[in-house]
Amino acid sequence: MIAEKAKYRLRWAIWCLLLAGKAAFAASLVNSDALLWKVTGEHGEVSHVFGTIHSDDPRVLRLKPAAQAAFDNSERLVLEIVLTPEGMLNMMTRMYRRDGSELKPELPEPVYMQTVAAFKERGLDESWVNRLTIWGAAMTLMIPQSEGTVLDLRLQAEMQGRNKPIFGLETVDSQLAVFADLDKESQIRMLTIALGELHRLDETTQQLIRYYLREDIAAISNMENEYHTGENRKFMVRLMDRLIDERNGRMTQAMLEHLRAGGAFVAIGALHLPGKNGVINLLRKAGYQVEPVRPKAE
Image 1: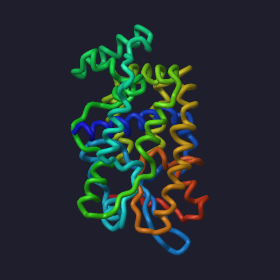
Image 2 (image 1 turned 180 degrees about the horizontal axis):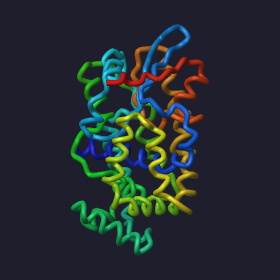
Image 3 (image 1 turned 90 degrees about the vertical axis):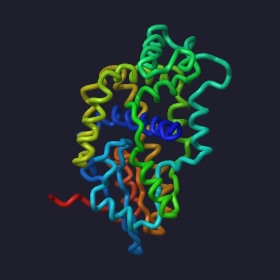
């Protein structure tokens, strides 16, 4: 359960930051009206790319028929990361301080007190909080509290149960580096943003799920237009090259070998799919025929 929470923390934090940054570009998002995409190579080999959301809501976990069929008929699963026991330990370890330092001296007093209060509401005392890195504290506060298994973990477990191979496009280290390599000022701003969003985290989560279920990625992106202004908006836009475009390019290159073989079910965060620099557009530029598979009207 600790390991699942660790991965949930990482994936949800990235998701929340993607939401915040993509808002400025939502109006012009292409390829934003479908979660499942059929990818066909030059020799007719077929795979699928599917946009996930990192939620344990039963409606999210229950794939629509076309997505479930694509998953069931696939020969391999490709995820952003495959969480191994070693990866779990690495993730948990890196969020904590290992040099004997404390969080308190690194934060402005008001931010530190808000952070302690926020963790106290989650049943964690100040001594525990002081062991966290700044970015680790921010990531932890960006997620809603949950005990369930989120979608990408469910897909990983099901494919493992079928004894089919599972591959990752990134590593735990590369994903954590998005946060850990930020300068101190940026980490503090990220923590401040997380603290400011706490009061509406559950509301935002439910709204996000509603948009996801209707496969409206543009609407998800637009959610944050009302939330971030001024310097916070500028900060989030600057962070986008790290969070979206650079990762989209790396992930697309990493998935090509699986697409060439065919039979792959690639499951990545839904906000990686749309836009001119999104995975769908990059796959088309790489010579693949990519077409949306939309749910049939009920």
